Image (cartoon, rainbow, N blue to C red; front, top):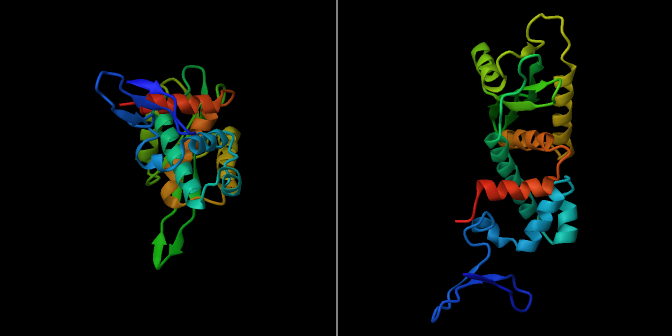
Length: 232
Protein backbone atom coordinates (compact mmCIF):
# COMPACT_ATOMS: atom_id res chain seq x y z
CA UNK A 1 0.00 0.00 0.00
CA UNK A 2 1.16 3.50 -0.84
CA UNK A 3 -0.29 6.80 0.29
CA UNK A 4 -1.76 8.52 -2.76
CA UNK A 5 -2.78 12.20 -2.90
CA UNK A 6 -6.51 12.75 -3.11
CA UNK A 7 -8.23 14.22 -6.13
CA UNK A 8 -10.54 17.23 -6.28
CA UNK A 9 -10.09 18.10 -2.62
CA UNK A 10 -10.48 14.51 -1.36
CA UNK A 11 -8.29 13.14 1.42
CA UNK A 12 -5.30 10.94 0.53
CA UNK A 13 -5.97 7.22 0.29
CA UNK A 14 -3.98 4.02 0.63
CA UNK A 15 -3.65 2.35 -2.78
CA UNK A 16 -2.07 -0.96 -3.72
CA UNK A 17 0.54 -0.59 -6.47
CA UNK A 18 0.92 -4.30 -7.21
CA UNK A 19 0.37 -5.36 -10.81
CA UNK A 20 -3.29 -5.92 -11.56
CA UNK A 21 -4.42 -4.72 -8.12
CA UNK A 22 -6.62 -1.66 -7.78
CA UNK A 23 -7.40 -2.00 -4.08
CA UNK A 24 -7.87 1.32 -2.31
CA UNK A 25 -8.92 2.27 1.22
CA UNK A 26 -9.42 5.37 3.33
CA UNK A 27 -6.57 6.70 5.48
CA UNK A 28 -9.00 6.42 8.43
CA UNK A 29 -9.51 2.68 8.03
CA UNK A 30 -8.39 0.75 11.10
CA UNK A 31 -7.65 3.90 13.11
CA UNK A 32 -9.36 5.64 16.04
CA UNK A 33 -10.98 7.97 13.49
CA UNK A 34 -12.79 5.06 11.84
CA UNK A 35 -16.10 3.56 12.98
CA UNK A 36 -18.69 6.02 14.32
CA UNK A 37 -16.20 8.89 14.10
CA UNK A 38 -15.83 8.61 10.32
CA UNK A 39 -19.15 10.43 9.92
CA UNK A 40 -17.30 13.63 10.85
CA UNK A 41 -14.98 15.04 8.15
CA UNK A 42 -11.39 14.41 9.19
CA UNK A 43 -10.38 18.07 9.05
CA UNK A 44 -13.39 19.03 11.19
CA UNK A 45 -12.48 16.35 13.74
CA UNK A 46 -8.86 17.51 13.96
CA UNK A 47 -9.85 21.18 14.31
CA UNK A 48 -12.34 20.27 17.04
CA UNK A 49 -9.64 18.35 18.92
CA UNK A 50 -7.28 21.31 18.58
CA UNK A 51 -9.93 23.59 20.17
CA UNK A 52 -10.81 20.98 22.82
CA UNK A 53 -7.30 20.94 24.26
CA UNK A 54 -7.37 24.60 25.48
CA UNK A 55 -11.08 24.15 26.34
CA UNK A 56 -12.48 26.50 23.70
CA UNK A 57 -14.71 23.95 21.95
CA UNK A 58 -18.04 25.49 22.93
CA UNK A 59 -21.18 24.45 21.06
CA UNK A 60 -21.68 27.96 19.65
CA UNK A 61 -18.07 28.27 18.49
CA UNK A 62 -18.03 24.84 16.86
CA UNK A 63 -21.36 25.48 15.13
CA UNK A 64 -20.16 28.83 13.81
CA UNK A 65 -16.61 27.92 12.79
CA UNK A 66 -16.76 24.17 12.11
CA UNK A 67 -20.38 23.69 11.06
CA UNK A 68 -20.96 21.05 13.74
CA UNK A 69 -24.36 20.33 15.25
CA UNK A 70 -24.95 20.46 19.00
CA UNK A 71 -25.26 16.66 19.07
CA UNK A 72 -21.94 16.25 17.26
CA UNK A 73 -20.13 18.60 19.67
CA UNK A 74 -21.53 16.79 22.72
CA UNK A 75 -20.62 13.41 21.23
CA UNK A 76 -17.04 14.44 20.39
CA UNK A 77 -16.58 15.92 23.85
CA UNK A 78 -17.61 12.57 25.32
CA UNK A 79 -15.31 10.59 23.01
CA UNK A 80 -12.31 12.71 23.99
CA UNK A 81 -13.14 12.50 27.70
CA UNK A 82 -13.33 8.72 27.41
CA UNK A 83 -10.02 8.67 25.56
CA UNK A 84 -8.17 10.77 28.11
CA UNK A 85 -9.71 8.89 31.03
CA UNK A 86 -8.16 5.76 29.50
CA UNK A 87 -4.87 7.61 29.08
CA UNK A 88 -4.92 8.85 32.68
CA UNK A 89 -5.61 5.30 33.90
CA UNK A 90 -2.90 3.82 31.68
CA UNK A 91 -0.14 6.04 33.09
CA UNK A 92 -1.51 6.19 36.63
CA UNK A 93 1.11 5.83 39.34
CA UNK A 94 0.96 6.02 43.11
CA UNK A 95 1.54 9.52 44.43
CA UNK A 96 3.67 10.67 47.35
CA UNK A 97 6.50 8.67 48.87
CA UNK A 98 9.12 8.90 51.61
CA UNK A 99 9.32 12.44 52.99
CA UNK A 100 6.29 13.62 50.99
CA UNK A 101 2.87 14.70 52.23
CA UNK A 102 -0.35 13.59 50.57
CA UNK A 103 -3.65 15.27 51.43
CA UNK A 104 -6.70 13.05 50.92
CA UNK A 105 -10.34 13.97 51.22
CA UNK A 106 -13.80 13.30 49.82
CA UNK A 107 -16.24 15.80 48.38
CA UNK A 108 -19.90 15.81 47.38
CA UNK A 109 -20.34 16.30 43.63
CA UNK A 110 -24.08 15.72 43.21
CA UNK A 111 -26.71 16.04 45.90
CA UNK A 112 -29.61 13.64 46.33
CA UNK A 113 -32.37 14.70 43.91
CA UNK A 114 -35.65 13.46 42.46
CA UNK A 115 -35.91 12.64 38.78
CA UNK A 116 -39.02 11.21 37.10
CA UNK A 117 -40.31 9.87 40.40
CA UNK A 118 -36.99 8.30 41.38
CA UNK A 119 -34.67 9.37 44.18
CA UNK A 120 -31.17 9.71 42.75
CA UNK A 121 -28.39 9.10 45.30
CA UNK A 122 -25.63 11.52 46.21
CA UNK A 123 -22.40 11.26 44.25
CA UNK A 124 -19.17 11.46 46.23
CA UNK A 125 -15.60 11.68 44.95
CA UNK A 126 -12.45 10.67 46.83
CA UNK A 127 -9.03 11.99 45.89
CA UNK A 128 -5.59 13.00 46.97
CA UNK A 129 -2.84 15.43 46.01
CA UNK A 130 0.85 15.52 46.91
CA UNK A 131 1.80 18.90 48.36
CA UNK A 132 5.34 18.83 47.06
CA UNK A 133 4.85 17.48 43.51
CA UNK A 134 1.22 18.28 42.65
CA UNK A 135 0.58 14.67 41.59
CA UNK A 136 -3.04 13.72 42.17
CA UNK A 137 -5.84 11.20 41.79
CA UNK A 138 -9.62 11.56 41.90
CA UNK A 139 -12.09 8.67 41.66
CA UNK A 140 -15.80 8.07 42.37
CA UNK A 141 -16.43 7.01 45.97
CA UNK A 142 -19.13 4.31 45.80
CA UNK A 143 -20.11 3.90 49.45
CA UNK A 144 -17.93 6.17 51.65
CA UNK A 145 -17.13 3.27 53.95
CA UNK A 146 -13.90 3.23 55.95
CA UNK A 147 -12.88 0.01 54.20
CA UNK A 148 -13.34 1.54 50.75
CA UNK A 149 -11.42 4.72 51.62
CA UNK A 150 -8.51 2.79 53.12
CA UNK A 151 -8.39 0.55 50.03
CA UNK A 152 -8.27 3.61 47.76
CA UNK A 153 -5.45 5.13 49.82
CA UNK A 154 -3.44 1.91 49.61
CA UNK A 155 -4.04 1.76 45.84
CA UNK A 156 -3.14 5.37 45.00
CA UNK A 157 -0.66 6.49 47.69
CA UNK A 158 2.92 5.20 47.97
CA UNK A 159 4.05 3.57 51.22
CA UNK A 160 6.01 5.93 53.45
CA UNK A 161 3.90 8.98 52.58
CA UNK A 162 2.59 11.26 55.31
CA UNK A 163 -1.17 11.15 54.75
CA UNK A 164 -3.28 14.06 56.00
CA UNK A 165 -7.05 14.25 56.02
CA UNK A 166 -9.77 16.13 57.84
CA UNK A 167 -11.66 12.86 58.29
CA UNK A 168 -9.81 12.29 61.54
CA UNK A 169 -8.94 14.81 64.24
CA UNK A 170 -5.33 15.61 63.32
CA UNK A 171 -5.25 19.39 63.60
CA UNK A 172 -3.58 19.52 60.17
CA UNK A 173 -4.82 21.74 57.36
CA UNK A 174 -5.91 20.27 54.01
CA UNK A 175 -6.02 23.44 51.95
CA UNK A 176 -4.34 21.89 48.91
CA UNK A 177 -6.96 19.18 48.37
CA UNK A 178 -9.76 21.64 49.11
CA UNK A 179 -8.36 23.94 46.42
CA UNK A 180 -8.33 20.98 44.02
CA UNK A 181 -12.01 20.25 44.65
CA UNK A 182 -12.88 23.91 44.07
CA UNK A 183 -11.09 23.89 40.70
CA UNK A 184 -12.69 20.64 39.54
CA UNK A 185 -16.17 21.79 40.49
CA UNK A 186 -15.62 25.17 38.85
CA UNK A 187 -14.76 23.39 35.61
CA UNK A 188 -18.00 21.42 35.83
CA UNK A 189 -20.06 24.59 36.33
CA UNK A 190 -18.38 26.32 33.38
CA UNK A 191 -19.67 23.47 31.23
CA UNK A 192 -23.23 24.09 32.44
CA UNK A 193 -23.22 21.19 34.84
CA UNK A 194 -22.63 17.50 34.33
CA UNK A 195 -24.84 14.46 33.94
CA UNK A 196 -24.43 11.97 36.76
CA UNK A 197 -23.54 9.16 34.38
CA UNK A 198 -20.57 11.19 33.10
CA UNK A 199 -18.83 11.70 36.46
CA UNK A 200 -16.13 9.09 35.78
CA UNK A 201 -15.22 10.64 32.43
CA UNK A 202 -15.29 14.20 33.78
CA UNK A 203 -12.87 13.27 36.57
CA UNK A 204 -10.63 11.40 34.14
CA UNK A 205 -10.41 14.40 31.84
CA UNK A 206 -9.58 16.80 34.67
CA UNK A 207 -6.89 14.50 36.08
CA UNK A 208 -5.40 14.18 32.58
CA UNK A 209 -5.38 17.96 32.10
CA UNK A 210 -3.66 18.63 35.42
CA UNK A 211 -1.02 16.00 34.71
CA UNK A 212 -0.36 17.63 31.33
CA UNK A 213 0.13 21.15 32.65
CA UNK A 214 3.04 22.83 30.92
CA UNK A 215 2.93 20.34 28.05
CA UNK A 216 1.65 20.70 24.49
CA UNK A 217 -1.76 19.11 25.10
CA UNK A 218 -2.71 18.72 21.43
CA UNK A 219 0.47 16.77 20.79
CA UNK A 220 -0.18 14.67 23.90
CA UNK A 221 -3.73 13.98 22.69
CA UNK A 222 -2.46 12.70 19.35
CA UNK A 223 0.18 10.59 21.13
CA UNK A 224 -2.49 9.08 23.38
CA UNK A 225 -4.58 8.12 20.34
CA UNK A 226 -1.56 6.51 18.67
CA UNK A 227 -0.61 4.65 21.87
CA UNK A 228 -4.04 3.44 22.94
CA UNK A 229 -5.47 2.81 19.46
CA UNK A 230 -2.61 1.98 17.05
CA UNK A 231 -3.73 1.42 13.44
CA UNK A 232 -4.80 -2.16 12.81
